[in-house]
Image 1 (cartoon, one colour):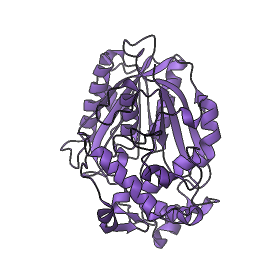
Image 2 (cartoon, one colour):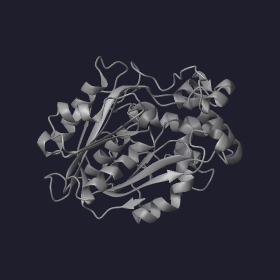
Image 3 (cartoon, one colour):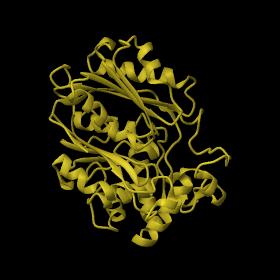
Length: 381
């Protein structure tokens, strides 16, 4: 876990169009988003002295991006193997580079052709070794199967129903309807929800995040170095960790326990805030039920109360805890969670436009990966 001294802020953001077929490769997507983020920070490529990214063998090498941007080959670069768990904590990695004096302006990007290229849900049917040889024969063909099992157990324990899952999805579609970036901009009725094909019970197609082609990028800067950093959202805290069984369910004491259960006390203690201080929550919504679980784990409501929060409108931009006002990964698109962080920046800047939350000061972003994950707290300068 890491709290920061106020020296780091997100000074620039950039994102490509979200599509199902980008017509190009992840390198070009990364370059487009990165150049936009650098320009948004009022910097030039020569000002960048650190580059970070995360991937699952589905992206472009960090050093290729640095080379194409004509960056100094002696700067700090690193690529992290990982998926959603990295989307919040990688901002903490960037802040640590800055606070250590290693860098002053760190570019962070995620680029993938998640629909037209390598698709996460298409697991290779191979049992050559590793733990998959024991789980694949029993239907664990990909993440959706794992989290369907986890959700089934959680619903049994908590009393959550499909009404709760449907409420999350319908709000996501409602908020995305006016978001010009969103891949899906059609509202969803409860009848349409019930007719959506079942992928892995109880998860229907609409309960699962989008598969998309896109790139997102941010620049993290010293607050006394970049012209816009003084008004950019500051990185207040980042935490990372969890419990056993992130992706190996045979080692999990409970298949229904998510990372937020393990990180709750660490998060609030490190950030120096409490749940009621959060003005907008960008909750990693790979699947609709994990939104509900994370809200309960982090203390935004009592156990079993998250579904009623959605149905009562408390999670709308006008409510007391706005959740994913862009439509999130379920409807805007899936840039492995980094697009949710960009929305948090827009909200704190007051530039979100559609679905802008009134005068937010504190934003929470989570990075999901089962029982292991991360969380990030940003504050308006």
